[in-house]
Every structure is written in C-alpha cells, then in structure tokens.
Length: 202
Length: 202
DNA sequence: GTCTATAACCAGATAGAC
DNA sequence: GTCTATCTGGTTATAGAC
Image (cartoon, rainbow over all chains, first blue to last red; front, side, top):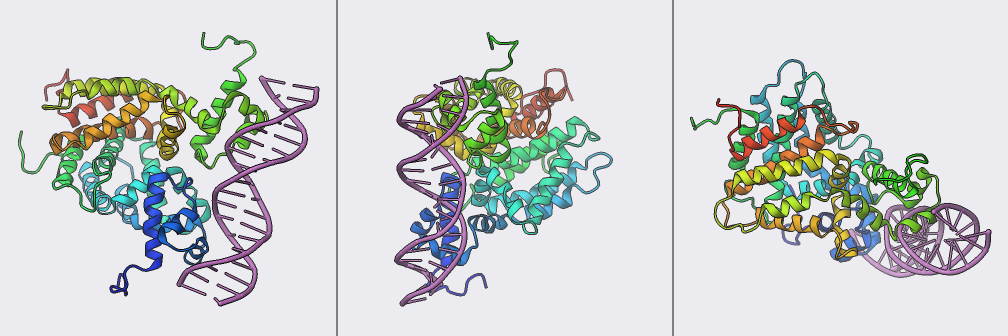
C-alpha cells in the first residue's frame, strides 16, 4: 500500500518531497525557497502549505526516511561500562550501512544540511525522537572519559569511514550503489575495529 | 606580527571574526544574521560592512584559515595513473591532520555549513582557489573508474575517519586536542591504508 | 486540492553624518 | 571607524475564492 495510484503516477505530495530532496541537497535547505520547490513540481507555493504545515515540516518528512539508523544506533551503546564489544559494534554498523546505502540521497541531504536538521529539534519536540536519541547516545559515547581514547577514536573513525565511503563514493550516482561497495566498506570497518575477517588468515 | 596591539586587545576585525565563527558554527551560517554578529561584538550592523564587503566575504575570511589542506591535498593526487601510492597518501594525510587539529574550530564550521561554503565559489571566483582545487581533485579521485573500488574506498574512508576522529572527538573541547589523539588517528589511517606500523610487528 | 492575492516580516546592503 | 536612517528585495505564511 505504498501508493494506491500506480496508473496516475506519484501523488503530488510525493512529487513535492522528491523535488525538495533534490533542491535542498543541491542548493542547501536555507538557500532553497518554497517558490523554487513549487515551480519545479508545477504547482503554486500555496499548494505546498496544504501538504506541509511549514518548510521545516517538509524537511522533517524527508529526514524521517532515514529512520532505522536510530534504532540500530540506540541498541548499540547501552551501558557503556566496561570494555567496548567491537563485535557488537561491527554488527550495528552493518545494519546502519544497509540503511545508509538504501537511503543514500537522504543521508547526503543530512550531511550537507546539518545545522538545518538540528533546528528541527526546536520545531518538532516529539517527532524524530529516534534520530535525536542516536545523536545523543553518540555524543555521550565519543565524549565519555571513562572509555579509552583508543576505543573512542576507533569507533568514531569507523563511523566516519562508513559515511565517507558510502556517501562520498556514490555522490551523483543513480539508484544503485556500486557492486561490492558494501563488502569493501565492511572490510575497512573490520580493520579499524580490529575484528578479524571471516574468510581470511593473512 | 600577528597583532600589533597586545595592550588594547584584539582588533575589531578580529573580534568580528571570532564572534562570527562561533555563531556560524552553532546556529549555521544562513540562520545567523549580521545583526546578531554585530550585537555580540558590541558594534552596529553597518560597522561590519566597513570591515567586510558582504556576509559571504566574512565567511570566506574564516575559511581561509583552513588553507594548507589544499596544498597538501593537491600534491597528493597528481597523475592518478597506475596504482595508488599508499605511503604517499599516508604522508599527505598526516600533514592534513596537523592542519585540522590546529584549526579545529574552522573545520567544524566547514563541516556544518557545507552548502554555504560551496556558494563562495560563485561570489569569489579567484580566491579560495586552493580549497576548491582540493575538492575537485578529490572528486576526480573517488569517482575515477580506472582505480579499483578497493583503493577508492580505502582512501575515502581514511579521510572520513580522519575528519570524524579529529572533529567528532574534540567537539566542545577547548583549544587543545587530547594528548595522543594524533597518534591514535594516524594508527587508524595506517590500518585502513594497509601501511605497516613503524614500531610494531604484531 | 489547488489557486490568487496579500499580509507581515526581516534579511542584506547602502548613503551619508559624525 | 563607527553610527543613524533607510531602501530594496525576497521570504514564509495566511485568508479566502474556485
């Protein structure tokens, strides 16, 4: 029941979301006016306000597609006492990687509009809870002085590598990620975290 | 000759730059008005226009402090034929890391305001040439189909790890990076690039 | 469900006095 | 070098017709 109108194409609401995703990503959220969005869709500015209460809500609707990273990420760092379980971290990163690769455009949007995304917290206190819980847990983790600097750097670097590899090498690509990208990235993350490779004894 | 007025404190121009750096980083470039900047400095909005021709020029002046990453980065990827010299890449990353760690606040600003930084290209065609050459060479590299996916992912991930480790683990910290951070990060980058560690034979 | 028209606002920027 | 005063333009958002 994703869309009930196969014959007549995507709904206006979905077309607005697609246009906004492209424009916000290319030009930036703040530098894109709703007039531009409406012109690309072929409707008027006022029509947008029928589907979304505000510009921020339009952005929030896009970012919600990235859900899932929140779930996996929150599971990932529960107690934070004792040594880091790198096997578990690796597994969580694998789930996150799947999410990022299947929703690449949204993650590019988020990477390029960090400050705009943060303001959603103010306008939408209850929604996006997962997304923000993840950010919070993450900050608590990398800033936790009880953990060794080495572990914090390793996990932090692994996440950076994941994002840079998944987003940087697929910028401008179509819907499909390159064959083998996921495996290459998981291998990198294994190397960073020091988790041995399964089929390799070098 | 950094500043000739030790007794009377930093010049107005420098105080504007400091205030703008903080506000642009916290709230985002687009969501910060020049009125806010001027109020924090204790001057009027018009005074800003004496020191900087436009809001973009103010941002550009901040970003110029990050120069150096351009130089090292451009040297790094010259011909791009044949296999990647990971030793050379490692060395360039070390220089870049020094630059990032010594100018962390500016790099946080850039990371959080990517789209705003990109518009500088339009307003300032000749300046920031190094910075933009680096971005261009980088894009050519990670998107180069003649290189193996593995090599592209490795280099791309190393850069992501560098940035995430250097910026993420120092967010909110004072002027000094944690002791040993540089060494930990270089070790991670070595692991990613497959360059053996100098004093270690495990 | 979409449009016209307009309100209300605030941004960046300029001119010229001091 | 800094201020007061103002202009100009575009922005989000709303009210109400169709």
